[in-house]
Length: 91
Image (cartoon, rainbow, N blue to C red; front, side, top):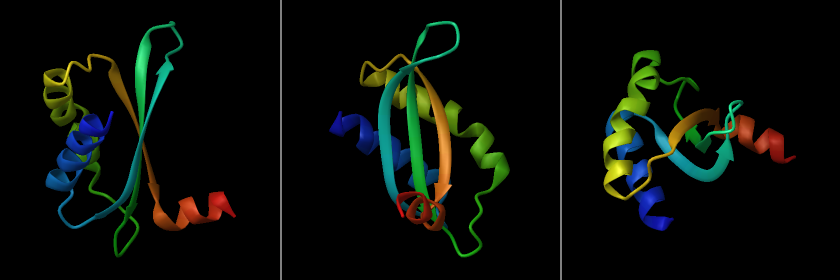
């Protein structure tokens, strides 16, 4: 699992070079059809609290191949949350 987290983190950092990745969580799950998926939650920090929408849309494409090389074939479902939102959730 740590290898998978590292790959996911590396891809995020390469795509969002102006964002700080605070943490990433990886959780197995099922979609509405009962198929196995993998939930990825990215906690990040940027100056304005935003990520480039074009890069967000293409992140799954950039994640799939490196994940598959590790034997992870479940489709990734992505969630992005700012560090501030994360801290407020925990409070």
